[in-house]
Length: 283
Image (cartoon, rainbow, N blue to C red):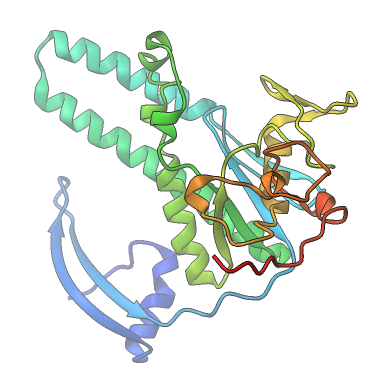
């Protein structure tokens, strides 16, 4: 029986199976609604070790801009969220009309279609992010946004708008898709705590002011707020001593650090002014 490969990217996987470089797992036959049969095969294979990198590309996620990836002190790539907002609102309007007509089966079908489109968009963005990192020989660094729907407040009016509601924001799916693609390609990937990444000045680590799409530093410096956040994510250096990440206690809160503003995350610029030697206290 002749078989056609659904996507060109799966050709390499099929070659590895034929050459016994990949181990076959479970196999399923699935028939689409259009009557097309598909073979779904799980595969286990070795992936390259993550490369050692000196620099990281920070990726800031949002709803106005799905993702902003910036090179260290360089240009950034923007993926605009307007198409997704339009899509969410369009399907929300259709659902309301169908609910009035009590068309439950059609509503389920529409919800499934909406999910597939969003997943496809996230697949495309994640693929481009990994390729962007490979082209420049850098790692990818994301914010840890767990529980953001509970910790960030929105009014009922905003939540009722599917285009702006954080409950309709698929931020975790984008991270998960990017993570497995990065691992497969040998691109380093890590997540960092999110607080202050959008409020700190990427040049010096001082707290500034974010107003809409713009960030303003204490000295009047202005830049795109999402680009500034991606710079902070990429420059993040972590902790100068072993602290519990869940408590979100940053290095600027530690004793003996006289520079910076309390609660500021440490960046490469601030690390030049602060002693980063590990603290060896017996806890």
